[in-house]
Length: 180
Image 1 (spheres, helix red, strand yellow):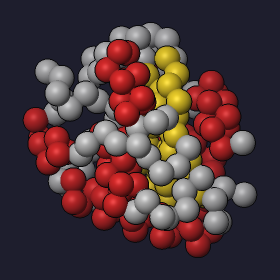
Image 2: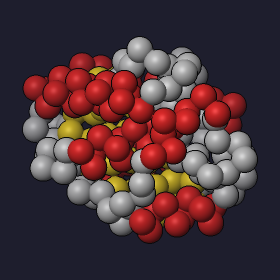
Image 3: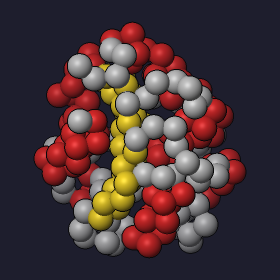
């Protein structure tokens, strides 16, 4: 069995987002972070929220996987950097925004301090050909600096609800390939 820590981006993932749909499928095996600063993201608050969710998830199973989207990728990377000895089976990082790009959310200024350094667990970064928050080249560079595998999923925008992915079966295949 695997327990999942769901780490959405700003404002959380709505009910049509693949993360929310997967979370419902996983039931008690999934724990969503709950930062106090969803709309005005504070890095410290989000990292603490990842830690709380991780501690809850690890009670369900010893194999914990972080499932992050957008700004949540940076929260996951920051938490992993501060907790390198915590046993994490994998980090699934989808559509990380470019912190130096023109579309990076100004409300997330505290996230600009997170360096992209090697992650202490197996990881997969998934990007899109036409993500308005990050070019494929930048996302591939992040994957390289995180020492993660890189996968370009096609032209799906920010890989969110607006992308029309629904339960995103292809994403589940990618996630499953990471944790096998």
